[in-house]
Image (cartoon, rainbow, N blue to C red; front, side, top):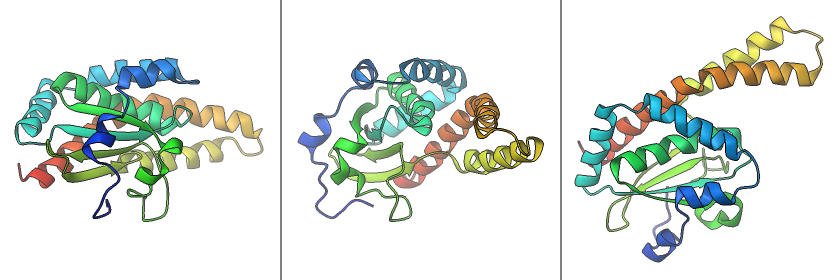
Length: 195
């Protein structure tokens, strides 16, 4: 939850990078950001776009995103909100987490973790609406199930082999997890703006 006197002023929000500028300057995983922007295009429906346009019309036109290029949850999740913003006209600004810890510390997961991506939604007048952190609930559940399954099927295997097998299964699930993200954001914003 943001502080009463948030560090995210109108000026600070406007100083954030556009998504395309963030992707252009990153050091790692640029191909993954592009890949998951493509899969986000496949799961974002016309109904979803109409919903987010309704959110903008109701005054919820801004979203701040905290992330880092090395984080799998970021390179799989940030493209979803970027696609939503591009398709609906929402004003999205990206802030690298590690260079903006003062913002991050307003939105700690469970009050203590600097988890990313973190999406913070604001009104046109920079009033806080709501925020969303890391990944959808179903993705966390399924990720744990995948990890347990892989570890059972590969006892005594090299840790790197186990990680690669797990990564392959997780990556295969991500288009569905992107849809879960969209659904969670719709529910969150519906409550925040009473739509």
